Length: 115
Length: 114
Image (cartoon, rainbow over all chains, first blue to last red; front, top):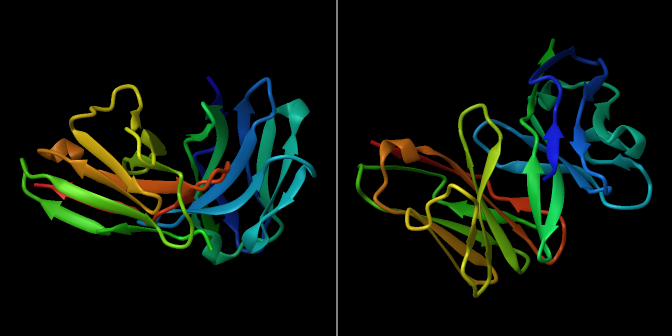
């Protein structure tokens, strides 16, 4: 079974600083990869995803992620943090079971943005 | 596009009662819907997968008779927590997909059982 590891359950950055949230997966076959953001007491919003093609994926709100097969990683970055980026971020991989794409989530990283 | 709603957004009930949570895809037909449970400051735990018109597939350790899932149409799935107890208190989130790899999530339902 696949697994997803998010290093750092809490990350703090200063406003305007680079945001780097790490995600590694375990799979011998390149999976579909996703980053979601969750604000308090809300559902998950899709930031970006990788399926095939270009390994550098751009998402909403200035976020991007790069799929690196050799490192089995899909780290999320944003050049300049904004206060509104403070939230919980989840990395997920999908695996198919009888044609259904089920997600395996990482444990999440809480991003704090300091003024 | 790809909007998923949940109702209610929060519910408080007495121990022993049943609670129904609705999940609707508002602007697309959802062939598959998923139900998750999330404990405070933790990740999402998949409870079950439901396909329209067929029985739900439950994850290991999830009680089928406790958490009844119905997916009667391509836009509606319901989760009923039967004979709820305080340990069932949690944040329940649904997601939906339309024959693709991307899941679109609802806003969640917070259940508090007294």
